[in-house]
Image (cartoon, rainbow, N blue to C red; front, top):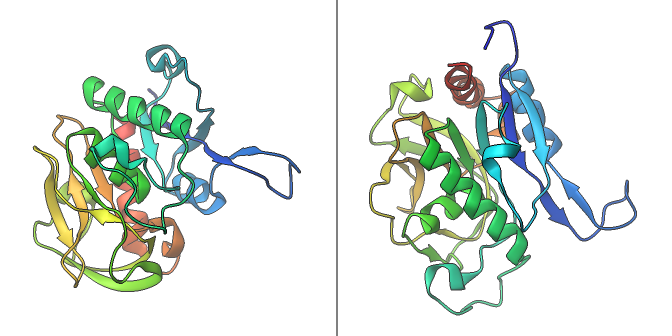
Length: 230
């Protein structure tokens, strides 16, 4: 593609029971997330989750995939039954679309960035499990994480990063082939590298929350867009 064009980034929509703008059920993409991709140089495009998925056809002109945050993954996906009253928003269609899109990204070596739920989806899809409810959930939680392996492809210059989190689940058993890169002070995994030849990373936090205050968050998004530009 021309270096002057914005790489097209596919973002699977989140299913919402209702929104003030639509009055009824809706498909949504977080505005801050779309703005992060735009400010990083990309063109964010929202895709409807459907049961009859042909990602090869739908993403023919797409340059990268972003799997965003959202509600909880069905525990059956990782061989468990619900064990917490805090599970919320489980939607089988949402899971089906996300898991198939993750598989497509890995199989086609397309540039991939996953955020929060998206990172949990990827871990489960590749054979890992999740902690269904953390002892101390990171809801509206600000912290500093430490990278044990600072990947140059992420565009980061320092091993410490100020992050904004909103999750009550975390990676439990890491899937084979996924490389952990950063950890929270409590010890759970905060960033990973996926087993593919493409630029493919996962974040447990939400870079869109504070990228205007923490330039390193925007640098990660810029690195993703640069990979999508090819």
